[in-house]
Image (cartoon, rainbow, N blue to C red; front, side, top):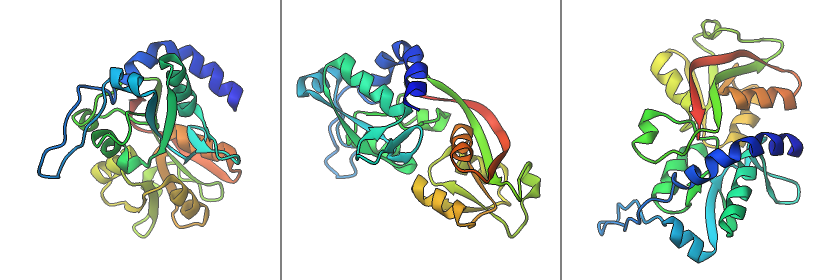
Length: 234
């Protein structure tokens, strides 16, 4: 896994490091006095002066971002974060994030940048600045191999599909297939456990994530490898 991450990451890093910093490091904005503030966020010079950069990553989403058995952050996105820290000459403080609070963490200044498998959408681009993309992605649907879902038409009126709150899978299905019942979870680990326990007939997420899940967990098949439009991760 580490060799795979290094090979892929090194090829893309030179194009993305500088742009990645723009995702969270704009002009400093002070919090409004009314308390409904979006907080303050730091400029690149302020980050360098402090000696530390705060990076939001997933802690439970292998192979993108996860905490290993030694309590260390690992994964594809973490590899990028480590290289950013090296290039800036600063220490890294990784902050665990969930899909639903990625924008909030940027806007409140809890993190300087987000490296958490963040799909670029027009709605999100109105809230935060995205760096250059480093991955192409679509949605995918994984299901048990003894009851493979190859079309959304197979999902019955009483069936439920598992999604993670705040993801493009949730948005897509609510907009395009409102008849499908969704079972929503805030954390990746919660959704994974629920799916493994048979709480839903399928799990919809980024296709990179469901493919990784099916590889790591025998007995599951990505019956729908590409759903919706092709997007980018930045």
